[in-house]
Length: 80
Image (cartoon, rainbow, N blue to C red):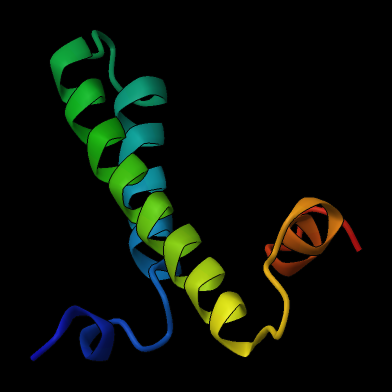
């Protein structure tokens, strides 16, 4: 099973899960563990990058022109 078929709907579920874990460690722990925060942050960063990459790659495949400048920012939803 490829990663793309495993996450056909993107990585938002993983991003939400790890965001919750990060929030729990930082806000709901009397003595937050910096190593645990870093570990969770690395997981979160990984899935954010995967989500971003999947959106950009799909946009590039559907585009006739290279995505640069405003076209790129629109394709990833930063500007309308």
